[in-house]
Image (tube, rainbow, N blue to C red; front, top):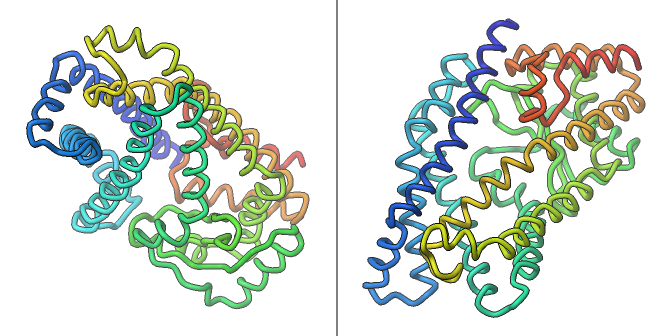
Length: 362
């Protein structure tokens, strides 16, 4: 199984790197060839008001990007998962999910892009105002995701196993976590991987327990994985991550503010207000994301380790934690001991073998 997990991991991360390089290349070609300017001029010929012009431009470039990325997207999210027996989802279901996620991504992107252009034309310190709006928007989205977004892709219902539900509710009380309800989510329709989450904010806080986990793991193992999720709340990791992501957003827009004049000149563009410069904005997002990703992954691994330790302290279930990690590694085809470079670049959790080693020494 370890060889299979290594093969899956290597392919997954190789294609992730290829996707990043490919995305950057497409944006550079679109900007450098003059296609972006051509598209802007073409759409202006329809005499659309500015907000519809932005919506139309974003729709066209989003659709073009999707088409050009479709072979890679299909292979990594469908073919590869079937190749390693990690899903039973049919092609029809995959296409429906693609349509839903595409429409959702377009709507959310349009809100952010429209806000960017509106602010850009009205404030000298537009980078600060834009950052604040995007940060607030992301927090609101995190709060609404469990009730508005997740149900678009999964069905979930109140956990029917009353004994397990009561154990989870008791654990929440023990860890001083205000929990609204425990739900079972039909993960098995799309993936055979196992997972559990404590998601939402305020009145939308809830446990989402994948049926692929609930049906194959003991009560003690389910309890310890949720103790880990509750630990994130107790240790205020969500607040800290919001703070870090806010600083990243501020840093990104300040970088654009200070350097965009030079970047625009490279592609013979006049201003960020020029619609054909939008792909340049996306290029900043990708390149800045590549730089920030390892640093955010490092911080995430620290938070995950701290959550593991608190979960072990609260439950005392060292044996259940170790068996849980072994089962998750096998079911999810996790690379238990990745190359240090792969770990540095991509791993948001400590590798399984590290987590087990820490548990054994606890």
